[in-house]
Image 1 (cartoon, one colour):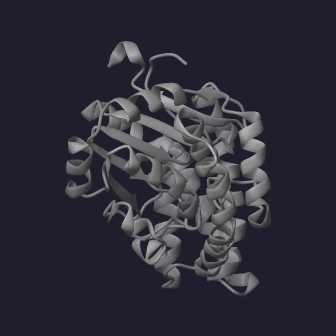
Image 2 (cartoon, one colour):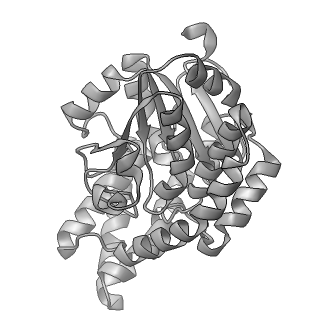
Length: 307
């Protein structure tokens, strides 16, 4: 792709995507139809205001979700979805681990990235997309066969294998974190110190420190959080401690779509070598990456000539 910064601007289609994502949320925070009607009315109003101001789509979503939760006095309405996601990923992990560990070197890295992307299919905040919690093993196999439409995995292997330092891993959703573990183990074996960053507070099914307790991740990496109640890692809302961590990092792995929308600003500020690892479930985000909806992506920023 070109050297320009990654940007995911507001477009007309974002409005329908945001509203469609509420189909999962609103029945969980408002049980009767009249309450749901009023919340949809509010959502339409906030979308109209946001479009007038040309608010970036991820920020528009964050502000809307915060207001809806505050109105209903709700905390973590997707807790059951998170529990089911964690259970499904935990069951899939031993078999996935076996497949990854059957390989070595660069091939093992590619398999670990395929596992991480299979985990990224656990997504409850993309319109017209339904995760298949029972299909994580088959998704891993399919991703191995398909490969990566944008594939900077060779550069990642060269960085991991040729030096050591602090690697910061920006986690995404609950459950998904289990399938990040093959990569984390490999990086630790190669001598890297790892900080695994979850959200300060879940906005949808985002992973928090509570979600990774007892998973085994604490034995591989230090676990910290963004300090923010937000999708992704918006610079205006993350903590100073998070920014200081990025400033000290030699390498960042950024998982998922919301991090694609928010981390490039921080990555650009610090110039840290970053790999965006995801399945592009949203066509708008895919287009921002010069990819197609459904593509598996391992994208390096900055590109080599910018380093």
